[in-house]
Image (tube, rainbow, N blue to C red; front, side, top):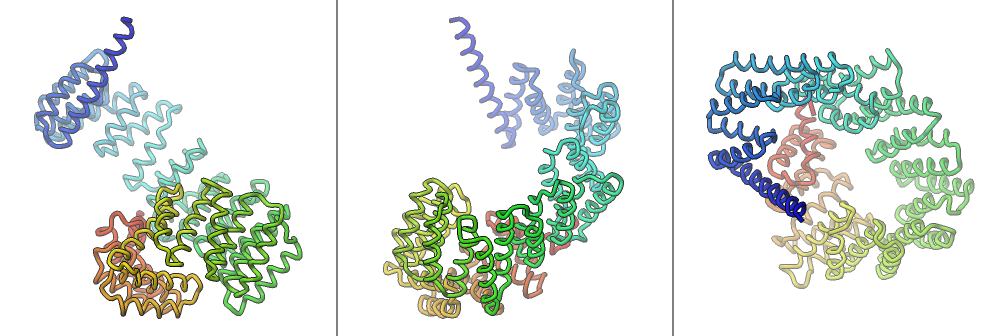
Length: 593
């Protein structure tokens, strides 16, 4: 019983102490230093071994400009039975605050001398120097400790310091050393590289990293250097050079195609289709199994479709048919068949044939997920053909087949979107509200965006006339009937002027104008949103789309830079913020990203 009481007492005391520390920190952060000081004094007296509380006590004295009191407290620690040499750094900082620079230097030297005597202190002393941005001293501490005791590894700390000092070559060298000593450090090192490396091959850090890797590779070949060069070239979107590195890696890893396939996916995502085509052909050539060959051909046909003009469609169809002659129409080619029937429906206007093909495919021996994907594709084609009720049946079947899976959430979103196309906005909202908590951030964001648009544009018009027109125009865009969509958007802008749906219409029509290559009209739409709806929810979309238009198509980088800057300063919570900051720095010509 006594033990139980003692434990309860200790827990209660610990809880009270934690509350007191939180209160003291809050007073400190609010600038109420006298109140903070009173509590920190008590805490340090109760628990003299707690360095965090002690340092807060010192900082509080310093905020009150009671430097002598701070010095007395620090000296008590340094003269105690168990001295902590990192407190020499605190003493030096206390002198610096009083502009007693010679005394500060003396104290800092004492801290460094402690490392000479015992390298074990390097971590805490180096960290203390870093906290006060005394980077030269921190680097000296870590470097000397590693010289004195080679078993100690402060490469991570040194790499960060070298980066902050602008010693980029030394920084890259240290990070590479870290990866070589422990490959698990590579993702962290590459994240650190990303603060300096950007898309511009003439950016100084890019050049330094490339030279560092090439020099090390020539001195002592290591597959790591190929991997990091490939990573660098991918950042620069130079997929040809990345491909050269990946082929070198392929030859040295028992012909493992995984790195090549990853590069293929990235180049497709980045719309570098010509490079992707070369990589896909390499995958097909080097594939060792029929399934690997089929996968390579699927990537290749996807690329061909991205590059194709209408006059190429007949040739592409023949390429698909030749592949089916070679590999059959079984479950092995199911993914290729999905792409083919999407092509038939959406490009060749052969919807009935595509639907029949997919129904035949669904009868093959397939996994639940394969069958569900086929039904999703069938439903997509039926929506395209405006057979909404049939499509909803298939989407619902998918939801039941793969409950709680991301595929089921995708099907639910498509139910909501189909109901929206039909004009059944209430049912659409019910589905969308469920999806706002989707485990897929992309689906959750899309659901939130569509729900917000429906709600906003249902408030002022109980008949939802403009919203119905907008949904119809949205469907026309899906059906690639872009001219008709533009006309219907014009109708909304003319007959529903001043209504909430106007900015939505301007944005969507601007996007269609981009597809039609009517860039002047797209620009005009985005400028109207920026001028008349600068405080509305779509303002950041308009800024970003117009900036991309100026940067990539209209060759007006200064205008693009100004728009990215406006996103940075006026739309800090925008989903475009990170990309806008990156593009702004690129256009401004920053050396460090």
